[in-house]
Image 1 (cartoon, rainbow, N blue to C red):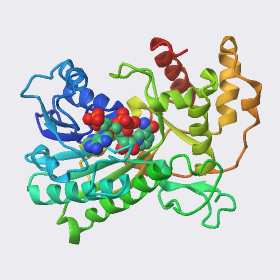
Image 2: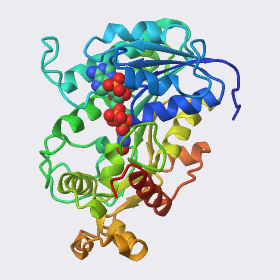
Image 3: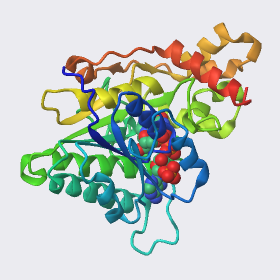
Image 4: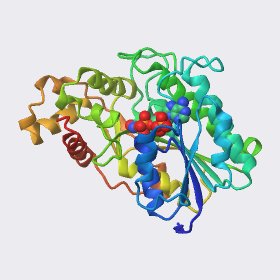
Length: 343
Ligand SMILES: NC(=O)c1ccc[n+]([C@@H]2O[C@H](COP(=O)([O-])OP(=O)(O)OC[C@H]3O[C@@H](n4cnc5c(N)ncnc54)[C@H](OP(=O)(O)O)[C@@H]3O)[C@@H](O)[C@H]2O)c1
């Protein structure tokens, strides 16, 4: 694999979010010139967060305003870039929109436009989409149980019912249909030679963040320690959708994105991205054994113990190495929440 250290231009949509901002930080450290998009450039806190990064002068970090509900706004940010990371996702429907009736329509339309702008740019070689493992569930189509493996061949059946299924219905639909749409541009016929990679990431935890609060997914990972019922429901949702919970460290997520960019071999298609695949009861056991002073409740040990194999090796086969196992991810997530005053 050839390491790039030039000032090659790359675009990051959603550059001020949890994953996006850490990715921008790493790219700047690696001497890339970054075009980052934000939904609203008047949001001083988000602009300030990126501008305060080392190397973030106006030549190396160029900020663009682009709303997923107005897909054409992404074109300027993509122009002249060699690689595009599409990280932004609308979490809630913009009720004022008369163009799209829900987040899925908006997310799919913007993914389509972004892929088209990449293909017609004449400069973009590879588009890398931050997908989610929620789109790759081993749940059976009939809803009765799980297959005994999880890998890139699986697509979540969208009409299946399971415990907690109403919780993140819009997100599940939007991530699944957007990933399918964007991957279709990786075919020669539609994308005109554009390479498209989707990185379907597990639940992200870790110690560091540029945000001034505990990131949502870190709060979900430590919900058995904070006893936050809503965040714990989200953890159970993941377990009931996927059988067990794929987890990954923020640092590994960002390194995996950069790996997919810097990999000099042709790269197309879907890659699951998680270093661990664990049950809620395994997480509870770790907390009980290692953080007894935080008094995790015994009842969290009662979760299901399913035999489902993590059978995804595509990213590792390409040469990617995960640095963080589940214990390190949980330890670091606790450190993050402690720093924010949430534990
Ligand atoms: N965290 C995880 O565990 C996890 C796991 C798998 C996949 N992912 C994926 O990773 C990506 C980033 O997630 P995150 O955890 O970093 O969440 P996040 O902090 O909430 O980031 C979401 C990003 O999307 C942007 N966004 C939301 N609505 C938008 C709109 N209407 N127009 C333009 N941008 C909009 C936000 O931009 P502004 O900041 O400018 O508002 C923000 O940068 C998402 O695609 C998510 O599905 C996350």
